[in-house]
Structure formats: C-alpha cells, structure tokens
Length: 183
Image 1 (cartoon, rainbow, N blue to C red):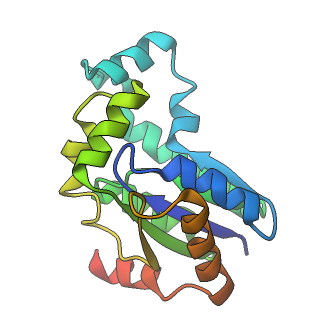
Image 2 (image 1 turned 135 degrees about the vertical axis):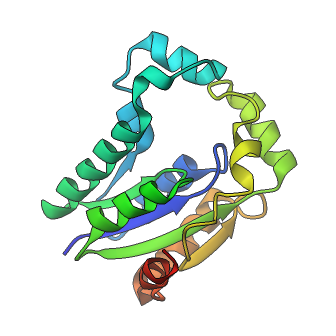
C-alpha cells in the first residue's frame, strides 16, 4: 500500500509550493506529481492558449485529467508514495481520484487563501489566465472532505508542510470515506 497526499485548492493557492516543502521533510521519498506534469507534455502553442484563456476545446481536457489519474493509480500500484496537486473542480475529477487511490492510504488537504492574495499571486506568476482562481474559488471545496485545511496566506510553506506531516504521522481522519459518502 502506498500513500498519497492530495492537495486541492484553486490556481495559485500554493499547491506546488506546499508539495515541494513537504517533500523536503517527508520521512521517505514522495514524488510530486501534478496535473501540470501532464499539461507540460502539450505543445507550447497549447500552453499559450491555456495561459491566455483562449479556446482549448480541442485539447480534450477531461481525457487528460483521466489520464493523469490513471498515471496516479499506476504509480501507487508500483509502490510510489505521491504528493499530488490538482484543482478538483468537477465530480469526474473526484471519481477518477477515488478509483486511482483505491486500496492506498489517502490524506486529503484543502488549501484556502484570501481572494486578494490569490489575485496577486496569479498576476505575479504570469503563467495562468488572470481570473482563474476567482472562477474556481466558489466551487473548489465542493466535492471533497479534508483531513486538514491550510490557509496558505496565513502560514509559511514550511509550517503548512509540518501540518501535513502531523496528519501523515497520526493517519487520516477518514476524509476519503466521507468524500465517498458525499458523492
């Protein structure tokens, strides 16, 4: 059985930063595997369209998300511990997550952040469509229950990683089962 830490939050909420901070203090090797790992395989022109908020209907994003979770499932099946970050904004995202993680230890972490901080981070990054976090903020926590919620505007990445580590050490609070019941 492998372990997966799932980081769910809006764009620019600090998922990747937290994942990297957690990797540095984890008791064993955790791979940081993100939906961005899959999107990075797209041609630069497609990434440019994503960043600009242009039409991306030809990219078949639902299939890419399902492929991401198929990869998650395979990595877990091969015994790799993972910290994954993905903004789970649709029911099929959660269904794919549940299927991929079946039989493994799962810790669900929700990332919150004030809207003005998200906007500032988004502008500073420059690699996301401005307003993406605003689009996601109302529904980002609709589908999941959590073992831990972290306000990334209030705590440092190191402190947040330490909080995730505490949950890992004591074990899940049953958030995955509560999520299954929620669906």
